[in-house]
Length: 577
Image 1 (cartoon, rainbow, N blue to C red):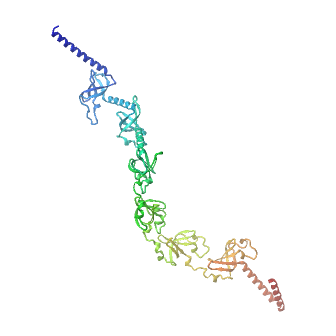
Image 2 (image 1 turned 90 degrees about the horizontal axis):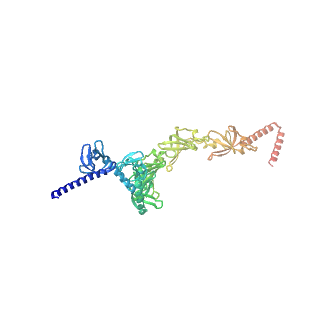
Image 3 (image 1 turned 90 degrees about the vertical axis):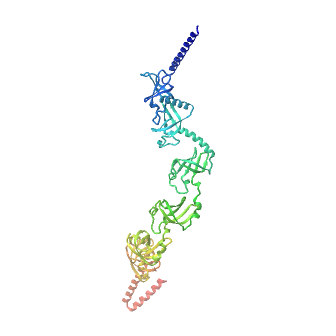
């Protein structure tokens, strides 16, 4: 064979081999492209509606350009870029291959999530929306985050998590149904356990550390110290007054606290905030003195007084009795209100008990100090009856000052049983000043003292031995009270009722019965008059007998009278013997 023939033969043979190899490669590639699988292709052209991609198939594939548009609205792919695509349809009506970039991405993500589940790994995503029962999370595909799995504690406002990026644990995965359930709580619990162990290892009583307010209650707040919560009680928040913890803290606040108590077994931690600063009561006795005038703010009103803040952590009490010299304060709120700035006088300091007694009325002149100058003892005053009690009447003398007329000083009459028998509210009366006790703020008055005492001349009106008439006003076990006039009463003792034995006073006397009796005793100082019916009847009986004898003697002859007198004398002597 000639060289030319050999060369031509070699050339023909080489060309056939290349064509065969190319045809074989194309055939192999076509066999490798299968619908429903992901393949790698190259961008050939970017049109208005489609992006053309070469996947090594006999026909190019088309992908809607929308699948390549990014957040800025621009197409984020260029000619020559390699992309993973999903083969939707190998040959449509136009003889073209239908591809999808989005489906390829989702399938890749599902595979990654599946692998993460098998390896018990975490996934990361952004919370995008609120749905019934929880939140939707974008981890490349949509996943569900139940409300109970969002945080360690129940969350009321789930919307605040929207837009946040977090890591999650997959707790349920079903690729066939497209169902993925996530948990952030499981991750937090694991982290918390690790932090808790570290915190417990270093926790000591007395140490000061930072924490985050996690929960607020009426009695305090719980502070996360790092995997373990401690209670900051309301009484340990401030040296001053705290009505509610939310006055000082809000959820999420980072604060410094001091460990007061720690029980490793029960994992209970008691915290304090005020203990970080010095107790202001340590210097109270140096900063404040009795009789000192101070200015403070009313921070609390109670039934018995008002608490005034002198400085942070130091309060004093204005007792209700120290609010006014003259007014009867029914409740402190009638005089002061929370938030008022007041001036007061320090009455007493007990630093150990942390008590300061304050006085409001002491900032003004005490009207009782000069009361006796205005109303000397024995002077006459005029006023209206302000109140009536069973023991007397109160008479208003001036604003806030009342005088008491005791029932015993209302009238000389013993018939007054209750003050309302004589007076009613609003009556204007005159009275005499009897006594002023400025220490106890008592003003004693008397009305009967303005009138003559009927007992002053009792010895002349009812002398001993005189016979009186009266009305029985009351029966007692031991006698009867006899009303002699409007102001004077006497007593007939049971032994002075009759010569005969008297078992009961009511057997002899009746109420309202008019009687005559003899005055047998008199004590003006004790206002007592003793009466006797028995002695009066004796005298009257003797007087009648004497009158009878005189009449008998007058009717007899002289000799007979003499003889009768002698017989009478002898009879009398015999009776005496």
